[in-house]
Image (tube, rainbow, N blue to C red; front, side):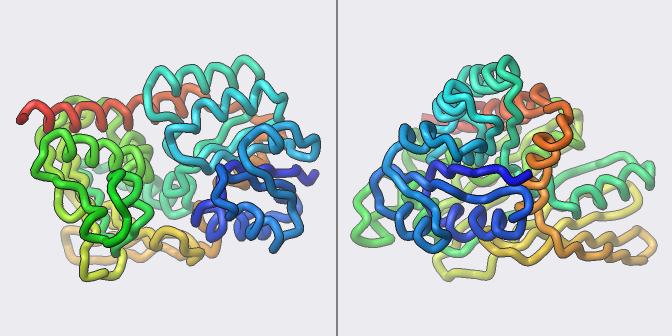
Length: 343
């Protein structure tokens, strides 16, 4: 069966990721409607694929051809739009990460989907990436306990993230950069980057270390970035993100150390369809393993998962979605509070 998709949002993620991905899954999905908040971008994207466009959410949610709603709007709108899509009687919802910006909103959104029996998928594409399944299989088969986890993001300049973390004039890049010397500003930047960027990989971390114990250190890194260290299930975890003015090539890597080996999962840059992540293992005796690369990426896998929920009536892991949201939001709140305490 082919489901009509309505997309709320018309940013770069919609144009570069979701529209091309759904085109690859034409047997399951067809984009029929795109709505923006007044930017006019929806019309341009929709025209390329012969879809309808509108401004605001009402027309899209009232469109009878829209059976699946994809929420790709700013994070502050996610929970309310999930509630609106459920109230409009839509059959399924895809929501970009984060699910919500507060725990209360996440709980309300998930409970609404649960009560209505509406399948919900959160777009944590790294978790859906086939490479993560291979990495987990290796860790399980080796039987060696995880000793540490590190997530490293080195990103070129990206005004999309600059605008997210700083409501400042946009005439020049220098004026967009927040003053990280101010604890309140630094705390807000770190919280937004944790919920907007680190949220890609926190479900992977929670997969290995499900109990968040405590935040040990946190620092806002100029020009825009952070370093956060915390302990989860007794395992030390470090998250490091920086956007460099020099525009270095992107690096997005999860490193897991055990007593016997080091496992690196290196993801393609965001907005790139390059297949799955690469999994490389180096053992203590010097042997190396490179797992096979999959042509399917996490973007295809997450939408395929939604198709399976619709076609086969599989149970939705509502509690897992909510626990992922609680984990990420608690980490973000605790890290921000630790910075704020220095004021």
